[in-house]
Length: 437
Image 1: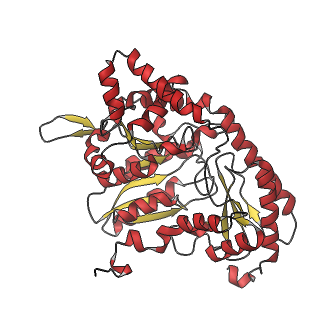
Image 2: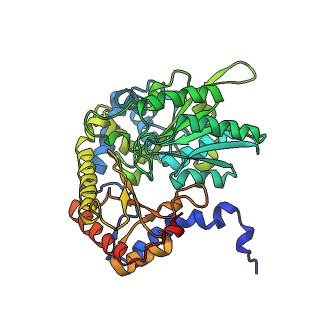
């Protein structure tokens, strides 16, 4: 009978780090009474089953209004759809309305969430074993996982309190080049980064674009949280500032509209010129990768999201103002509760950052905060969280830090969860100064 040695399988499958998010999910299932700060799930109190059919009907009406015959509408929804997506026109209108990103529909690819967009982008851009992806560190585990699955080496760049420093990016690109390799692309989340909640300032955004041109980098800008800035506080995306077409923009509808649709998008308006001199967008040229990964994204999911976009005049920023206020309220609840349980001047050894939005904040604690500690916290104190070490691209980063995800807990649950967390921290032996150094 055929069997396999576990270590003989691909590193993307057997590496324990690739299963870290699964471990968090399983811990939540094992301790169902535990309050969970471990996920970044979006708020789900605004969903209504009746909306599903209404959104699909709205999109069907939209197609009919465009003059499509009934047979064509039926085929679009029931058959395999275009590889690059059915709702590219609508997404292009949304990008112009919400982000001042002016690209043709041909520059848009509809994907199965951010994850497929990242896989497609990396598969197209990384062409040699000597090519390297630069990435902010700590980083969303999905980009590291995508790179690992494709055997793409990643060079982490430690972020500061204001996110990624452009000069550190330039230095990293030069260091990679000095090793005989080529830094091809840079991944970051400029707005409310997962896991740290940092925001890259406007001046640094402009400088990042300059560095990308100087070092010949493509920027992979991941922006799942940008719509949720406080009123009047939104910064322009890198893509909207990009005059040199250095940015490939990666977006998702999971946080803004409908997580279960599993839809995202890749925006790549760079020109690709073939041997005969014909020109296509990079998004179109990446179609073979999309086709091999998933053939095409669900047309039914696209119809739901398309109906939402049409119904809201392609203006998700306005449509998500109430949702943004919910996340802002939850952020304030988390920060207020932390201040109450860990007051200034105490000997608790706990500090935290103060994001201006997003889904996460980072707590520094006086002990090693690993998965074993998280399990004790869930089992004995009824609260779970995510070790920050899971998100760092070096071996020692984030060992005494935890990520607090507050997006899917009501304010009362957040306050109770922070109280339970304070009890866990109080009962956990603190490291000595020598151990922390």
